[in-house]
Image: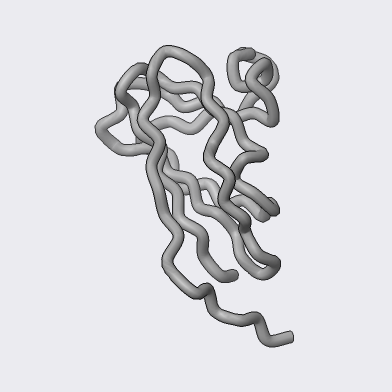
Amino acid sequence: MVMANARKIVTGNITFGTQSEQLPSVEIPGGFYVILKPRRTNVGAIFLGDSMASANSVNGNYQLEPLDPPLFLKISNLDLLFCRGTANDVLSWIVEKY
């Protein structure tokens, strides 16, 4: 099956305050995935979950450290993810074809 190319490069960043945040609504078409990468200059880990509660929980989330390799996810929309980080830390993302 041949997949169409993306019409534009879709990328972004989220800078954390003191609360968990839902990522923005960005549709991820079939045949594409999102790559998540914390900045190397971040002070602490970024915690990902499927709700505010899971992003805040030490038991219900996925942890990304500043030096971890990128995380590749096949999801339909970026807003399915919630995350929490240390104030002023940044999580970058880009949508790519696989």
